[in-house]
Amino acid sequence: MRLIILLCAPLALISAKNIPAPVAQPESPPALHDQKTSALSEQECRDRITLARDAAGQPPLLDRGPASPDDTFLIYAVDKKVDGCAVMVIKDNVDDIRPLPKPSTGPTRLIPLNPKG
Image (cartoon, rainbow, N blue to C red; front, side, top):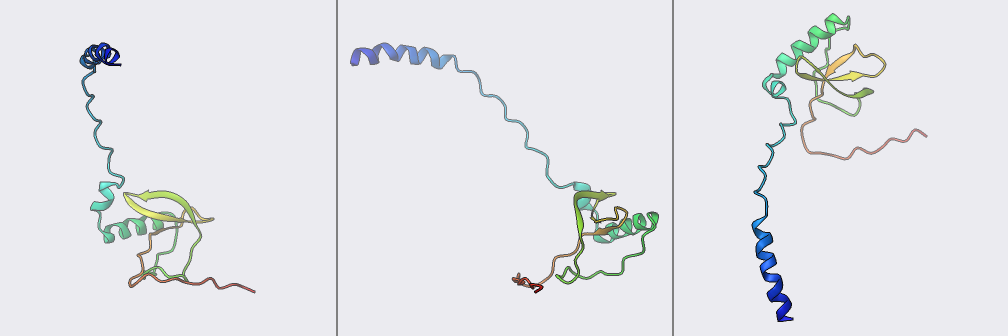
């Protein structure tokens, strides 16, 4: 047994010299958010969305409150930006774009389903 260990030890030392140098790690991936979007204020985005809606012939938006379960929209699941501002696209009318709703304030609460029956 000792003989086998003594014969294998030089092989381990020889193979250790042939280990390649470590490869440089790739740079970290770019940030997931667009830096242009984060630099724009809410008012700048609202102005850009208003101009885009006017150009598409859509009426101006009057609702500026937080999201609620009573005011719902069917939207397309797309990542759309207008001049760097994230918008949601209303289903069945791709020209109807709206700003993303603000999250409601206060604690998170569970809203039960109202069955229609």
